[in-house]
Image (cartoon, rainbow, N blue to C red):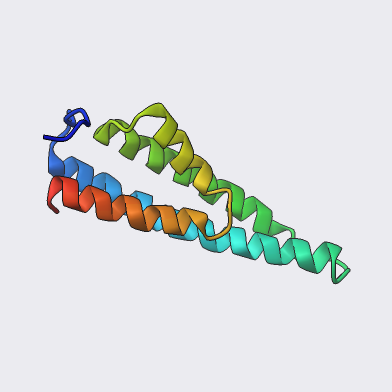
Length: 113
């Protein structure tokens, strides 16, 4: 018996919430790497007029990541601390992708899909 509360949603609904979480975790991570590249190009290399739209795209993708992660957290009933940790993982380059891997593996083992 696990110490986690049982989900109030069927496993197929949880499975359908995992896919957007995974896609947006990867997308957020890739756009965050691009944003870091843009910041280095702008402030370290001192290139005039680097692309400024990368930050805007990353911001909107991160917003989608927040929604998808919160949706998943509610369905699997993650505690608040874990939810906040997974949400904030999308603000550190590559960390969101690593956290996604381990959380998805844990959810697949827990719910058998």
